[in-house]
Length: 147
Image 1 (cartoon, rainbow, N blue to C red):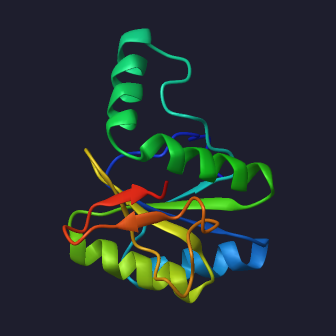
Image 2 (cartoon, helix red, strand yellow):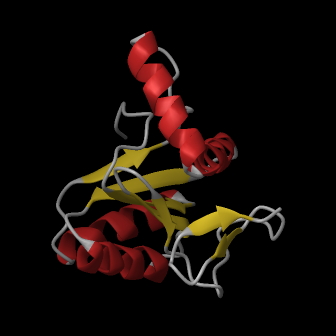
Image 3 (tube, rainbow, N blue to C red):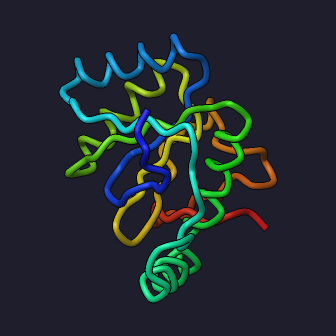
């Protein structure tokens, strides 16, 4: 497990449960060419601790996107025993390869945390969140929480 507790930008993340599933997912990602997989058993909200100015900027950016709500979901899932896997990607094709691999190993809440926006990559057959919280997808591809 990594000591990292904050989801970094330009990473695809998903939640996996069970020690065997975590290891199989890591091995699958490595076979797909992604050698660096962050394994996080704890996720903290954006802007906690550290420099207050950078924390404020992170919170502001999170409020302008849906990042804060998504991070809260990951925090809840790790508190319930899930493990977040995060993989750095350079482009959308890599993000899709990571999504496909994570889904193969039963991951849920698969999202791309870009520099300025969060994209939900989880297919409808594997919902990211309870229906009240699942983001609605606009024709532009941007996601927004349901109201």
